[in-house]
Image (cartoon, rainbow, N blue to C red; front, side, top):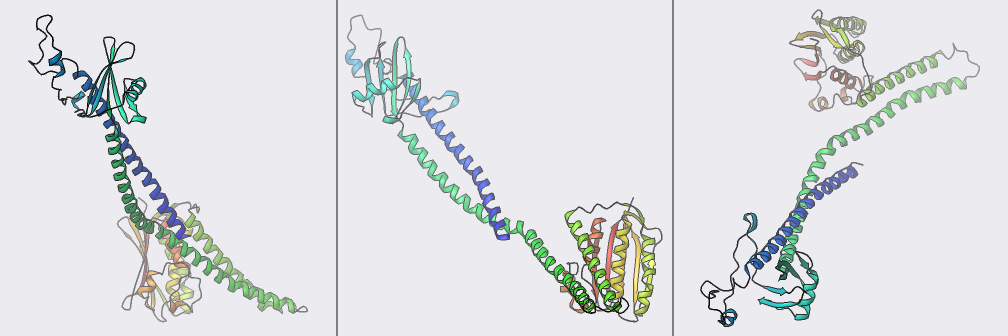
Length: 431
């Protein structure tokens, strides 16, 4: 499932970013092509504006003041062609067109004059192109030509030039864009591969924890169920026995059922906390009273283990919280400390106010928790090797951590041979 999720993240990421990059490249190429077309059209229009009968002659070679009857045809035919100047519209420089054909049409659309420069078109094809030039400007795809049309006093002049250069430029631009797009996809793939690994890491961790949780829960529930079923089979085999005779099996069944209920309640608490559906009502709670009550309740248990409970509780430490959960938190920490304390030692319970926080710490002297165990001490169903002989499900500290987090706090643990093991819950105080 994690691999499929990672592949899906990579695919979606590459698809979305690829579409954006493709759109950018498409817009750039379309804009460049449109600019090339406009520049060539502008060049054709300038060519038509300049290329009239009078512009064909440099100053001095054609003089319209010659006496009437003077024949200028020789000068006209031998005139030097003009050079197209680079003057653009709105400051743009038009394309300098060196290969063109300019035709002049009469009012009936017949070709009366033709000027060719570095390009030749068959007369029949030229007439076809003239008929196809119906707009002010445009392209004739069958002949790879671009044209521009000017109307002059009842006559029409059309300039034609080849448009293969702008399509060749477009093809080159598309090839470059395709190469850049492929390279960009490669980079995006590498980045997506890295980011998807980071993105699925918490999911993978949660998925692994969930599978482990289900496996551990199944194992923990299997034990009491096995005992209950075995007890029932024994009692069912004693058909003539009374309740008094089967009291041993009934008490065992009740004890295992109670443990099962406790386990289910703890798992439900964690599940609701994970889902965010555990709507807990907060009110002003006197944490000092809760802590003192918890210490008193554990006096008999500590006495049986030859452990002393030492309390250092500051009076009237209050905060906004849930009394039931805070009582459960104190119960878990004290129970854990008494359970793993060495005989003849003391469990120290300290509650104090530090700035705007309430700090509850529980210390015991016993087996030191290793660094490897500390890293997993709050994991569900996790129990250090030295504590596996002690009865429990390994959910208490996970629940304690959830309670502390729901009260805007943090639960930490320190363990060493000199000072023992100390669990510290730092909770937010009311203002």
